[in-house]
Length: 414
Image (cartoon, rainbow, N blue to C red):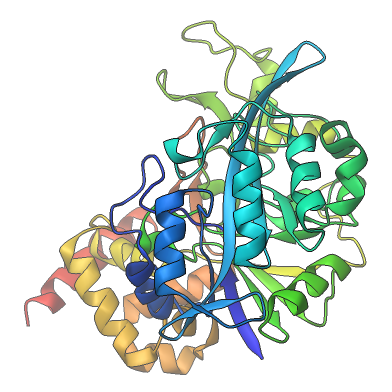
């Protein structure tokens, strides 16, 4: 069966996460989005794990169910440690095949830090050692380096990571077969590194609030079971892993270089021209994903490996609606229209991916339909994100924006 999966989210027990990130709300928003399989997130936190055990039905195949939504046990661990005189900060996603395995992982990791301190606990353990612990407990676990290009907390991060995956995970490297690209990069950027060819690239929302679920996701056509999904990822099976759903990477918080406090946003070339320094304060800029990929790449832009799995760049539907109204995506007016349009089409992904142009034009206001079609065609203007600030998306030029927003406001009066 074909289904969409988002493996990486956080619960209400994680820092800077919405109180609404509980099982019920995650499931309700998964339905709105059109997501069949959700990561549980945060299984290392005892209170969240209790809620999962109480509310989820164990299907006996490594997956769980709440109402019509399936769950897979997932957690993210933050490792902060020193190695050969340098401090590293690495985030890793763990997928577990059973509650029994999950309990063993928690029991072991609790010896190295306070798992109850946060939904995404910080451990002073080498990332390679965490991988060893997890695989020793159950070789069927999946260990996925998270958002691998984020500057401050990732495998290849410019401020805290490694240049090669084997330098991080050492003898555990062969057991790792998937990498999470993160919001600020898409698969095409990762294809520039030949060393990543053997890995399956996955994309997840890393959501901290219900409405952000599915902003990145994975589309499969396989049996809905832990074992089947693991095999698809391990074998990089293009017949069963159809594509990933991606942000436009420029919209991510760390696509370009710069200094947020100084208002300085640099392309990789501008960073080189300024010798990596901020012209306002004189300090080194935060080096973003594009520059980091450029540094480590051994291939030109546009190269595509023969075994590459495809992807689609999308903009969340509430952002498209907001653009047509000239208001914030979180406004009441946007939410009202969002739910009204979803009720017509079924799910957000039905609108963004599956509906024909004729169906969109019939079921949506023309300007909203135009926004969806422009997104599909990549006709998007984005001022790239940098140093923790999301990129600014524009689907319409300034004249269109003003006229269209007025039109939407007039329409909403009647």
